[in-house]
Image (cartoon, rainbow, N blue to C red; front, side, top):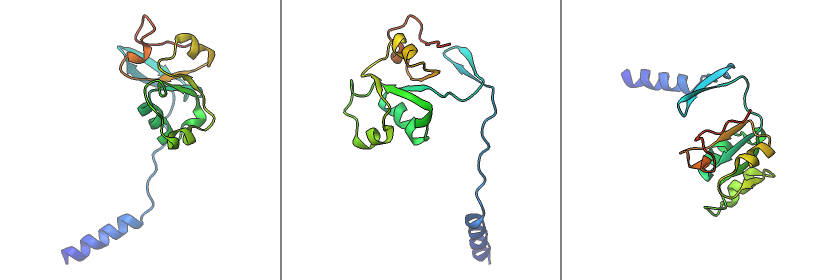
Length: 129
């Protein structure tokens, strides 16, 4: 009897419509590099740095919110699937982008990790306003 109830519960669960997460409400404040950063809307002109973070943005389907990427061909040979998924997005710098590169792209979000991505700047955080 328990096995039957377990199977029925599992079938009911699998056949039920999945609950979808609600989109985040803005503003959103996050803690980054010892400071609070508030986003009043989702970034529309993002730049990713490094193959892993770029793949993460692609996996999340965020290409339409990107203006480019950096830090891939200077360190790695990108796989063809990633290049296909990036479409016409340009690689803005083969290694680390300069602050000027990000400003020229009119980026409103820079997705990077490990402070190394900002090695050309005096501050570990690039502020683009």
